[in-house]
Length: 551
Image 1 (cartoon, rainbow, N blue to C red):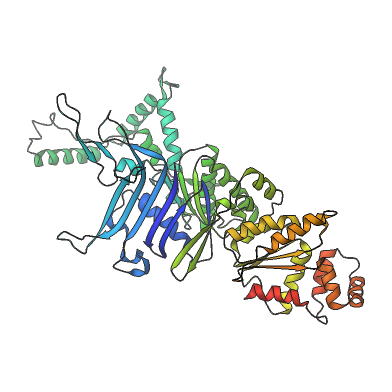
Image 2: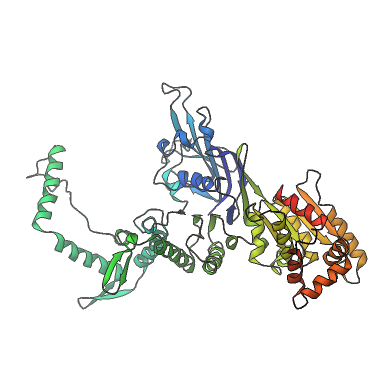
């Protein structure tokens, strides 16, 4: 099961949102842009035991406008089959709608209510058989009223917030990772024909559990326990008009021992260090986070299917290596489950999987989303995978992006920026070297498809096109065509290459002097060191590029 499409209106920072969601989806954006509000909207309508009008408040309404209504609509795939009467035909439900609105034509005019509806593929409320069929009577159908509990409960939603409390993921919590895992274990336990030796007899393991629980229950049935049970029973019979002394066999009340799932749900997670045992929920945030993520990895190992996971900032408390490891876990879980998560870490996005990234920004109307409209196919993905580098993933987090051919410009430009008193990191600017001129085109297409303000810098005569001058001229013209009149995309070039441009700017003699000064360094490092030489002017084109980045 997955959420195929999500529509949100007038919820918190979101005025209007309508977007298709991939199987694995990372919401990327600055703080306070509205990333968490997207997951919160889903949590509010799908996560609680039962969503009611009290699940929302006026604080949740966009700009706190009392005349606006919150609407959350979720399209699901595959459809949910629902029937009111057993053995009747299924009604196919493809979307759910939740509307926090006001009564308009009752004695409650003006009061808030929560309107819930199911829709089919045609956008209509499906009908189901209203009563059991009777011979000689025509079947009666009625539209589905609201969203039946069976429908909501068929969407297995798991939420992991920034508060990594292990308590939220224990089996006692209805929508938890461990509960999902133990539900399968319980089903397998009770369906197994495995035999257990009990008092010299071989019986099914599920029957053995019942006998052992009965023994435990008999041990717990102390005199006080029996008196409590009898008091409840006698008082209930009296209130119902029965005589406890003569009618106890007509209606009985008693405490029932655990079922297997009740037992699993009661489990707590503890930690033992030496002789000291403590509940995991009493440990520090870092350890609780590690346990939650360990459960998530166990979830992947058991190949659970069909769940929808909402995860806030999975990178919390993790060093870079573990972030990369967890992202691999996400990719495995995402083969059989949908994962929607917010992140500030480049280790949880990947340029080759740009179709799984949604950029979240805040403008004058509130939260806005941008998803790439660039088609993805195996050939394009494989081409980008060849240039896979976690540093290049930072492009999704950039307020402005500069694409350069290689390390020479990437190392030199920040030094020139320092001389111009510009802090590129503080300004949210990222310089990405793409691993060669030929890769500029693909990276530019991706960045522009996300509406990231992008600068492109290239050499007109690159070794990438050795002996293919005609192809290079055509390639250069294509790069130039990306420039936009509004300045959101700019393209610059160095005649021949960066070194020749520098040689021309500071003069051949000065250039050779600096090359001799740094003769035992690689070309990119030499370019960086030359950029630090304050007695030489900054090349005008480089000044133009850096000033555009800072605008």
